[in-house]
Image 1 (cartoon, rainbow, N blue to C red):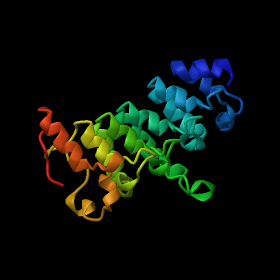
Image 2: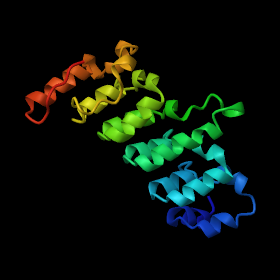
Image 3: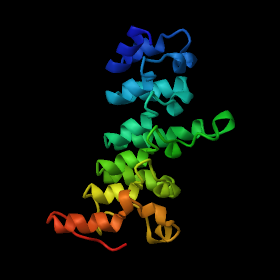
Image 4: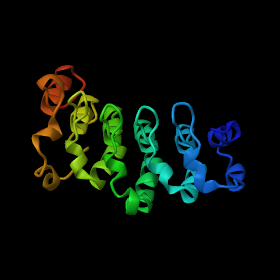
Length: 205
């Protein structure tokens, strides 16, 4: 990636972005770790730069770095609900035509983690709720460690009767994978463990 472009993304320099000769080719500008300007701007929370970059080059949204992470993974992993919401709204711009197989909520990294896994792992209830409601089927996606997003959310300690990420109607359609955890554990096991630890109140599954 051109060093000046990297700095612009890092600083959120809109003027530099506006003056690019070929802004539609932004997706070709990559760091050694295959990060795009969108990854860099997301890591630095430059919302206005992100919005403009996606207007100029929508495919940036589905590009993954060398770890397989999209900008959505980064935003969800930081609990940035503003950017998660923005990326979901902008995803309709690319989830058709040649990019129809790249549904942003279902994209997995090298460890088979979705953005929902990332939000759940850090206990970001609001981001997890947005992602789960947008695509409930992702709740049943299991990563390489046999962890479902719901298992991770419970394991993070972010689960109680007033914090439900999906309705009973949606939950009734889940497969057992939605509650799966490593080494045979389930979300229920995780909730019991937190209750025994004294800092968690078990809810019903």
